[in-house]
Length: 401
Image (cartoon, rainbow, N blue to C red; front, side, top):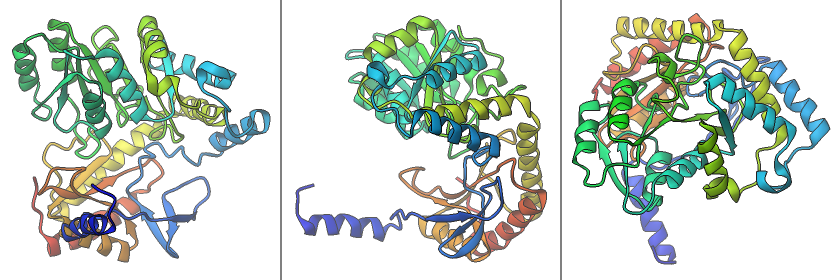
């Protein structure tokens, strides 16, 4: 696009004509102590059903205190990259604890999950090699594949047979097979057991971005890899985020000692960026301890998910086919972007914050309300949302897929 105001205006007009303009909503305050479920935005009180704070830890007093205490000792920022003078004691301790939690030899901290995925794909795949991705993989994995310089192919969503066929058909084999563990907009789980077998058979790295699985899935909350009972040999590269179930900010990669050392030496998105502030690392360490100690949080968010699915069925609300009862992501697909935006506004009028997700985040014709749950929600709040969605779906239809 050239630097002409008319072209910028035309581009924005096209976005508006398709009901695809994104808008921010400023959260002005949190109404309840130690919780971010009830918020005040634009002077209105709302129940938030769009957050990824699955375990309700973002405002936990012990997590907040850990951040505050560390800031008093270490300051607000790290001051440099990890490889200069920005790597502190809290970073080192958190990396060790994340490695222990995930059953890996080492872990490496990143400022965002986007940067972690970019680091992994660009390090493990190069020119002349292949990156194979699930068609609904997160944008950060897609961009990482495109930017790596490797050749790039996508297989049908959550279709292990399609992935195997694609692997078998590549002339030089794949360097990397990458997938979300839990898909952030659909709420389903990747077939990791089958993908692990295929990747191993074709000598490809399997990379699992488990941003929405860690803390929620598995008998002890260790994510989709634990859910399938897979060991580090079968899933050699794990990417996780700290800003969802753990309620803080940042990301990490966990794997073998050699893998982490290679990322430290080669990954530009690690080498050339300022380190995560130590207070964030301290808060995350506290959140990780709470998540492991208080398994009821994971059990509660999954129980609330199951309750919502039952209440939605009674209210005549169709959920996305394939959405897992085991994940707190429960989409209601309405089809068109205008319908999704109208439903979002009507929910706001009824006191609920549920964000409409539209293309290009999801495929055309599948705009949706992305409903998510937290251990901080109550049963009464979940029931009220299901009832409100029933009214709204009567007005806007229940088109799925």
